Length: 196
Image 1 (spheres, rainbow, N blue to C red):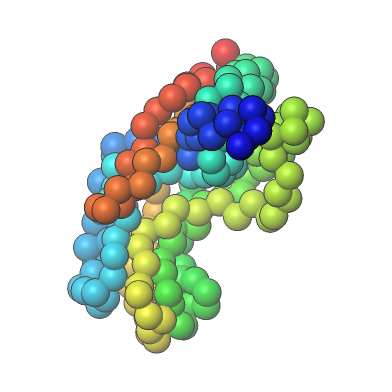
Image 2 (spheres, rainbow, N blue to C red):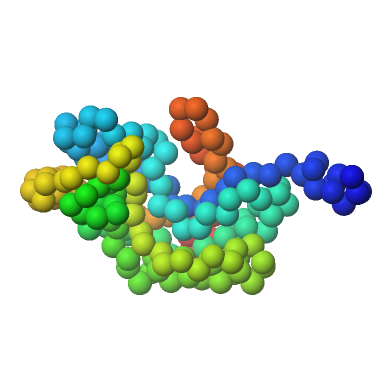
């Protein structure tokens, strides 16, 4: 084994992502939505409310020093944005509304949210930290089904009144994601307050 290969073998990689955390009152509302859906889909695997977040960028496995670069750009960008409000747009299913493999709560793609995510990505790309350029579709994943199942259209109509949530975004968080047999555990590694 070469010295370079040996050095790479010693590097600890951290599975990481940057997201907007979801406050407790929204998590409680989402837990109510999940309970309603669970009455129709008892076999679904529901996202634990305490792990819900709005992902802005998933980095995958990164060396520890890359987290410092990710956080530095996160701090720089967040200082230029004032706190803003995120609002829900309703419950939906993927891959199709009538044939579900999972459920999500859509979030309004406000100009501020889109600008924040684009500015962060531009900074991380310039630093060589990300190359992905997929479309950003703000949502919170509520749960997943092992096998796709049909969904009655009226299910989403009856959930519409309870699927209205909003919160003020005040911070960005760089999370470490540790995969466990019970699901992923998310640990906060860095926090950046909007507006500095």
